[in-house]
Length: 79
Image (cartoon, one colour):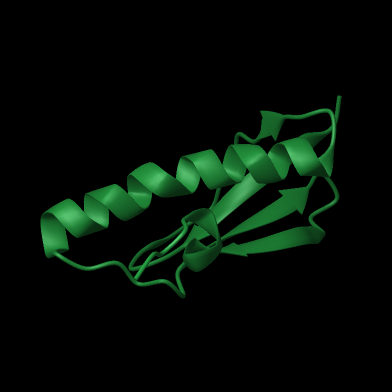
């Protein structure tokens, strides 16, 4: 099963050295989206703001970036 790494780029950049196994990139995308939401909630609770340009980069075992997931893509913003 392929391993994907979720590198976080927000106020502090954090490299994911452990990674997670997902059958497909699409499943990794769903996993990263779910991982993104608590990070956003934490920012909102502690700082009172969310920076929508923060992102998670999904990288494969070879170190190739497969998908860039900006925080804005992890939620639906309604007016």
